[in-house]
Image (cartoon, rainbow, N blue to C red):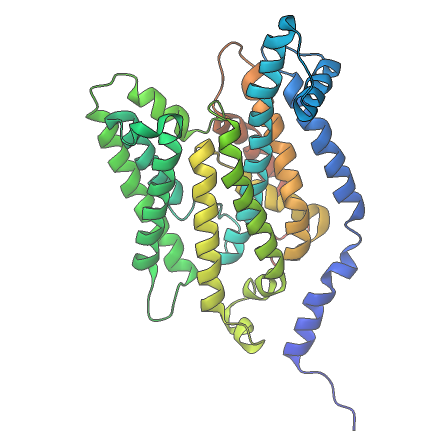
Length: 364
């Protein structure tokens, strides 16, 4: 005798089939890949000193193949290979990472307004960065001192948030958000005290510029750890994509489908905390990327997490490369903080997304 499938099994089948109904990802992926390649080339060429695209490609070819550079080309070669290329590539990595972690955090706390910094991790990193600027901690590490201190501050913040938010029920979304926000205020107050008591008159300006995001200190040494962190995050989150779909529907639904919501939330929290720490350590706090980009991508490809995670890294990379170009070229020779530009772009985009008919911010 034939019986209908249970509601839970039908729900699971609906989640699994969401991608097939939403259409192919081929065109968005190809389009964004081409856009990213063109954006990287343009980002290297543009700046206070414009380098012709042909020269950019020639210098990159020389650098990759070990070709010889004439004496009169040393300055242009240094600008292209030593200054702009690592900066543009780091912008792409950080943009991709913030977009991906934004998707994960919104699933973690089941809140459409969440971004990678809602858990207080960036505020902990800012305390570490302020300690370097004010007291000269880790001075022996040279240019890496700020990044190392910021990452350690982020890890300390992660541990504090975890133990403060943990309860007999595990890491619940509401407790995570409230704890993260409360500790963020505490870290910001501590950072303000450090800057206020500093005898260095430039400390406040330096810390403020770093807090708003900057890639001015980008070097080739800045790339590997951030790149590895983002790649690992994408692979792990893609593997957890279906489970994240279920988690976004609530813990009861997840339990009925055999998913340990508390355990999954712990893994997501650990992953997002570590990767956010790595990104903040090399770029400072760049807001709105992790908040807005996941919603824009959902409008493009649907709300299934695997689909969003396939497209979000490319979208975030393209976006932040052009934000960095604007930061370097709008008011030369001065450089604007990246967070200023992302906010100016992100706020109107978010308002448009919010008012778009039929879009439920990833809800079902």
